[in-house]
Image (cartoon, rainbow, N blue to C red; front, side, top):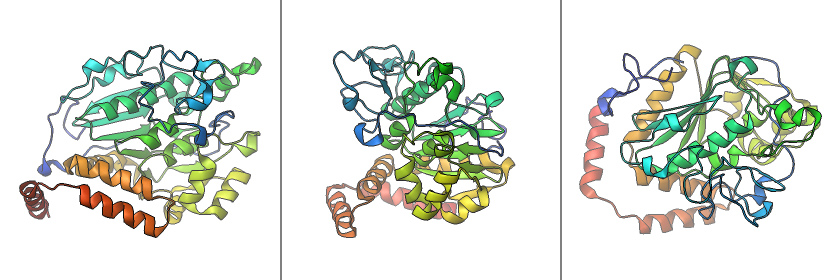
Amino acid sequence: MIERPNEGLGAAGSGADRLNAAGLGVDGPDAGGLGVGGLDADTLDAGGLDRLDGCGVDAGGLDAGRLDGCGVDAGGLDGCGMDAGGLDGCGMDAGRLDARGLNAEELSTEGLDCRWVDGVLWLTLDRPQVRNAMTIAMRRALIAAMRAADADVATRLVVLTGTDPAFSAGIDLKEALGNGAGSPRGARTDPAAVVRAARTPVLGVINGLCYTGALELALSCSFLIASEHASFADTHAAIGLPPGWGMSALLPRAVGVRLARQMMLTGERIDAARALAVGLVNEVVPHDRLLDRAWELADLIRLAHSDAVAGTLELLADGEGTSLAHALALEARAKLRWRSDVMDVARRFAARTNRK
């Protein structure tokens, strides 16, 4: 249950004095989590195509090379059954997005629980009986939820987690392979590209095993915190499949190329302590404190200046992988374009000073 301590889901927005939170699994790599072949991340528009409103546009004559990371079959978009008239969301009406926040219930689907609380959209992978393996419908709903969050000015953060005992074992491999009858429509649906492209920060809260496609999804988040129960593995090569959601690009950048090679070639898992030591996750906390810590971070991000947060994420994304000189030039240009509200800066500074 995603809620603050002693508070229901309908709690009003909190201020600086409410920087507290609420309380939230296991080993053995699973055959889940392929980024099934076909499109690779470089052919996708990283989840941001304004021309295609989500993953449910009537594709007409578009080919796979022009599609945006929602995942496509050869015949067209894998969508949620909408045409270009609205948000890509499985029943989500764009008119429902306003400054009061998302109607998160409309974003939920079987296996994905969506809740909007105090400016934070909580997305919980929720198929614990199969270690939260992601169906095509769940992946489409993740894409819809990310786009809805980006479209809603009141949503300041997305938190992505799983129902214990796992974060996720990856994709639902049986479904993706069509039970031997060939891949069904939508098998290539890639939510990781959309998470990477999001303008809204995405906090990954890793509560248990996180394998293969789920690891690619986690690596696409803005940053990660983990429970002591968390473990990480990539089983693509072990089961005879190539990565397809960014593993070969993202994992070496997170842990270094030598450890990435070992993880990707052997399928061996690493535990939470090792993940922290190599920089895969930012923090490891006791399992029963995981959601408390997530709420603490969420409140700090909510209190930050929204445009400054968005600008910082954009600078980091644009500067990643470039030369130092180019990254410094990007920051210098952004600084020249920024217009500060002196009174707002003073107020925020005073609030932070008084809080310490």
